[in-house]
Length: 555
Image 1 (tube, rainbow, N blue to C red):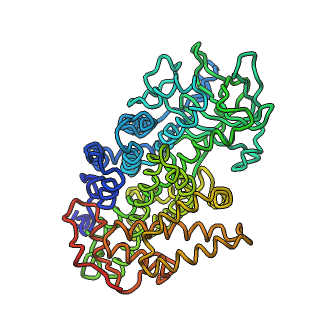
Image 2: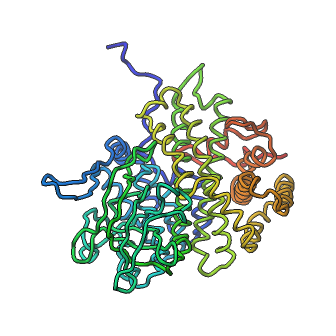
Image 3: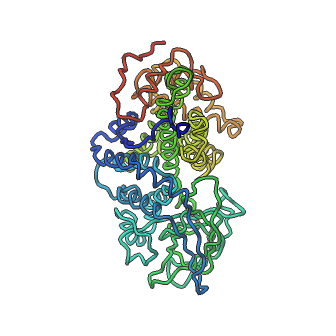
């Protein structure tokens, strides 16, 4: 019918290279991993931009996992079944080494390369990133038990994916999850009530208790916290025992979550569940903290990926959609919104790549190790919070089109709060930064070194000196924790952009976020900001790079 002729609609954002079209990412990888070839990232970027692969993300969320507690005969099986799209996404992620592979990768900068790949692939679908991330993070914690690490680490790093629940000896690959929180404690894991009782075998325990949140319950094994004789301890729990019997692991229900719907999160029950001690008894938090820190890094990466995909969708739509006689992207007020989103995205990208570099450098560089300790919590606090505001603004750029599920923006919007909550919400990470400030002065000095190159800029210099003064005032420090951590994150991002981004990008960021010429919402960048240059640089197509000199800003 003539009335159904469709005009003035943007085509789907597809058939593009998610890596190559992201200038900030390409430049950042070249900077933080200078000797790394881009071939694997270009290949993954091509896959991530293919329309059939983009559809996998929709399918995995439209057909969420289903819990099957019993078989037809009444036997307890405790299985979660996924849509086939989930398994394709998992296989691609594991096959490209996004899980435990970097820990045994002897090539240069394995964690930077892995972070960039995780960022690219997370733009297809975020939910399956949860078990991939936990598998990545489990390896350094598992090394506290040499025997377990010897048996399991090669499987956790294998470039393959096998969803079957089998004894580890019968599998070429494995996925590892985590179960820490309980009903009465939440983030206060020391309040856990799950009990661990020694058996007659050395290092072997039986667990009994209820875990309020267990992500990816179909993983092959889990790191778990439980109370032993000497206090809270870390344990390794396989789903299937060496004799091929199922370890008692009752999945009581799946969580009905705001977002992250493709991923199964469950309440589970232990009752005589066989487990092996990891690390020393009574030092469970200290043992598992490395896993927590690595998953926090992935929270930063995942939020940066969400920011980037939301920005890409917004720029793409406004490029093709016309209103009031011009493309939306050509209206200066829309440019202000898009440029503000682009600044958030590029700053988040620069920060997560810098954090990933500290993981590569930490084993041989004490300064990098100290920066990793404080920086991960800073990035986790701030970048994850910005994703929620940015995804809402990007959705609004599409108007009513953005509010419908087919646009992807509702999925991104529902996903946005997750990374800010998982592995400690905002207050937990802010308090973690305070603990580092008080107990690890070397971490503060490492952060100062990161900010030092930016002191030539008057605006940055004044802000850094003000931060130093406030850090020296220890009274009511907890009261000011969130404000201090926010300023640390913004100044660190400003320093990175000042060193590595075009002048018009760093100026737009510093003038708004540091100098304070900014409103309370996105799209309030000040006069003289190079709006078009910032948007052109961030556009999700492999278009020629903008002429940086054309947009240079002098203040």
